[in-house]
Image 1 (tube, rainbow, N blue to C red):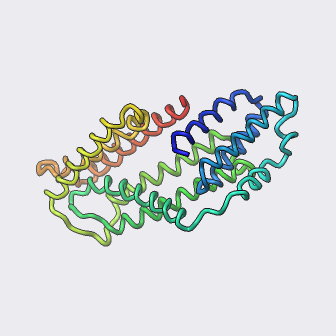
Image 2: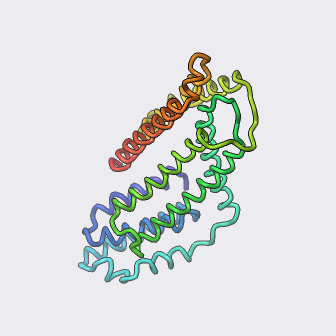
Length: 278
């Protein structure tokens, strides 16, 4: 089954959930989120098929006047665990592959933050450190959400998502700050021309990507666009001879961090607005 067909299963699931009563919807939503998080590394298509089947059975029971708790039991976590136990465990290759994806995204973000380094040094150590920190943070966020569903570590969902957002935001700001304020280790010195060329190539690549994927991915592109272009613009400005002294001063560095924080806030506003709309 293709990703498109899997997305259709998810969309069908979202539509059918609207038919649930408030009590049943809460029961199923907790089951859904818990199962998707615990089964993140499992076969997505098969998992969504099972979740959809549970939902359809729940709707049939609801039509007969039976609540989800009475039909499936008052221990939904056990139901989720039983469902997950029917799937083969994720292979080490799958785990390493996802860790590689996360590390790659972290490296991409770290590269963007290094655009603002006028010393023209690629901090190899930062790529490694930030990659490991990103993996650790994502694991922590997943664990917090997972344990908050049935163990009620954080009962209020708004508070839960706020905590997770702050964790992720703190990670991103920390990555930026580490590039600007912390001493470097394991660095590779490159020329100013090389960095300008790299930034120019980056601008060309993301602009082409925007033009090609604007229709299908407009929401996320609008959300992340300011950060991408702001990082590239700062990288070019900081390599302008007349601005180097200002950009390397404490006020200049503070301005860079503030600008990135504003872009981050914009990302959250647009991203969650798009998620709520969907």
